[in-house]
Length: 373
Image (tube, rainbow, N blue to C red; front, top):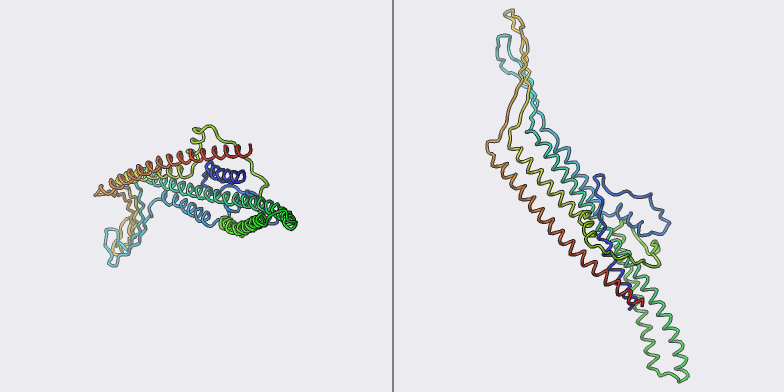
């Protein structure tokens, strides 16, 4: 009973410890890591976590997506492409100062005031959301890694206890064999001991078979092959102190959970998208300059003969059908409300999960104390 309670408590502790794992979201990427590992040293849990952050393929893919999303920010803040043109008069147009021979033109459009700023803010919010997704994936990888680590610890303790029982039963079997040969013990008692010895031997073989899947899980999470000899498993587990202030713990989870942060950034994204759509419905300004090359007249002498012409230009472009941008603004508002509802639902889910894990932890604590007494 005591051993089973220890296994149950350790499993609950692994799940509970995953709740405070809130990634500190930074736009620079992953968290700081220590110096490279010395491969000759046994791997501790901290070493495996660092390997997982560096080598997990899915985590690396999400990090690249976050970096790619950050490249949208300068794109959103850029002005529309400028336009330049060259024209040649196949049939020159005669003017008073000479024939027009060629034209050079340049123009640049400027969206309505604040449009590019809203687009940039939206792209920044989307990039921060992607980094929140990366932080969430990183937390899940670390939780899976810790789960496999503690299962390996429980597996080793199971093997040690089973070997101890097997050694004791073999000693009892030797004593029973001597008593049976002297006629002091019936054969049924000896047969029962032999059956129990075989059951424990079978259990040891089953435990040995359970090691390979757990090592394979560690290899998948860290991106490198892991052998049992590479690990430095602890001799015992310390009991974490049970938290007493549920409200404070709930506030911590609500403030640090990456998924909640990602949904908050998505809300900001749709707010800025709606602002940008509204401003897109306003006129945009175009400034330009046209330079016309004029050849000199040869049939007459004139002041400024053949002087080139410079034509400044100012233009306005405005949407004739404003319903398009109104629909875009309404769509952004609906998406923002949907994201807000999803965030509220996730908060309730996290609160319920937290209560369940605290209940399991308290029950495991009681069972452990009972077994120890």
